Amino acid sequence: MDISTIDIGCRGEEIATAWLRERGYYIVERNWRVGRYEIDIIAQRYDTLHFVEVKTRSLRSWQSAYDSINDQKRRSMRRAAMNYRALHRTPLLLQFDLIAVTVDDHGHHTIEYTENIL
Image 1: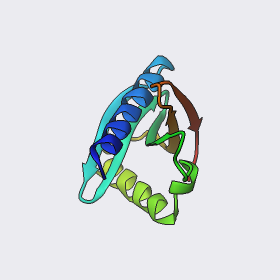
Image 2: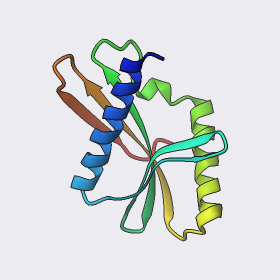
Image 3: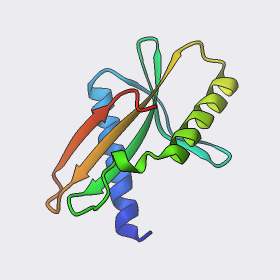
Image 4: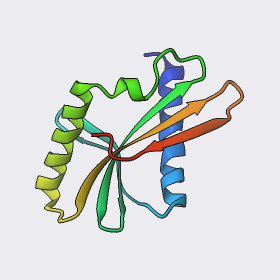
């Protein structure tokens, strides 16, 4: 992974975090990790804890953000969430969401938010 890909991913997570905050989500954690499992953003809104996967792509990317959520990624997200719930003993409902950020060559971006991806 080259540095520009890392930069794009970090920028996407910043954009997604700001987008969620603007919509009333409380950001609980960012890049929460347990073992080999990671959740990009954990956010709370009302009685639900949202485990948010952020996928950032350039306009030239050949794979859509949705295509990258395969069975292995789904299992990984579930395991991370179960570990989080066990460690924090939260009574909140759990939901798995995807934020797809597309960035063009001029720095402009679009966001697609999909709830309940699992």
